[in-house]
Image (cartoon, rainbow, N blue to C red; front, side, top):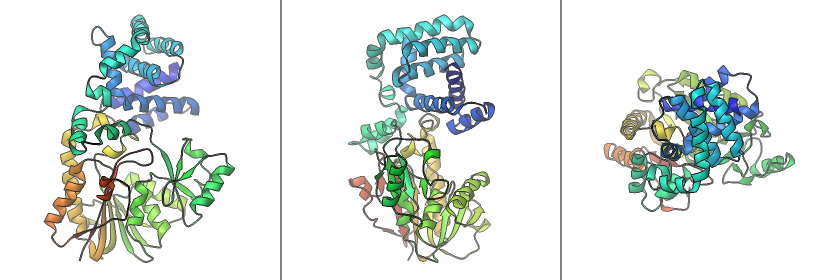
Length: 427
């Protein structure tokens, strides 16, 4: 556990300096290539867990300290240990003992007594401390105050449920490749491997118990892909047919690209501005047995990559705050700033206006985000329709049961992430 705590603390220290969790985890795996799978999973679980509940754990630590800690690494180690004591099944005595030993391994020999005292004090006062710190909203909801305020204003009846969903472990959902088998057949295959699954709408299968993706039968052979149920709505909403000329803008890592090709023999162009991430698109398509025209380019500048032939369908899965998928990327809650929403909204506006030029007459553009914020979603679409009087927003088929879903907004719950869709048609 000493190595696990030390590695997790190192990863978290990098995130708190402003780096993404994915970047820090990748760096840790490169630096510790020999780490066993069990320890690797434990490090990842701790890092995700601390970031899910960061504001609460930080509030607990501050309540336990007489004065601020001089070294950020020591503070992060205590955050790791407090998370283990509060949110995991690890034996409390083992957590405390290993935290003291990790303290020494990090070179803080003189702080061993402090670490021991802080953690044991937490165990003695746990209930009262947790109740006290949760009087403050960031500690109660484990989101920044600006995020809490925005969600409360925009969803006054659902804000608490939205915030709580953002702290939950995300569901593991698969997309069955309809070219190869149907959902019922794949559920039988899962049962043969002792894995429980249930239909989740369309080609989606929900696994009630998470497991390493390497254990999923048929994944390497292209029978299934890992994709959230809300994200799986995109390709069917495009209403694809054989020969349709399709642009998947901002395509990486290629989940929706592959889904579109599973549904029809379309002529598909996958565009992304990140050349390295396009490799993921190629890998996903190769696994599924498909090919596409892959381009590196900026969706805001079609003149640099577009041949002038209009597309019948355009999918714009726009860069956004990712506020609807914070449970999958909990670092987002602490790395995002309220000012970022304005920047994303401006980028989305420029992408929409630019790609509208490349859409054929009678064609459809599907605008999508994994956000719950109105500025990026319904307000963005309303402003687009004001600028483009010829554009028409089409009604979507039923994608959910509440009023928000009927307006294209899916809120995160136990079956899917938070997503937004708007289908626009050119006359």
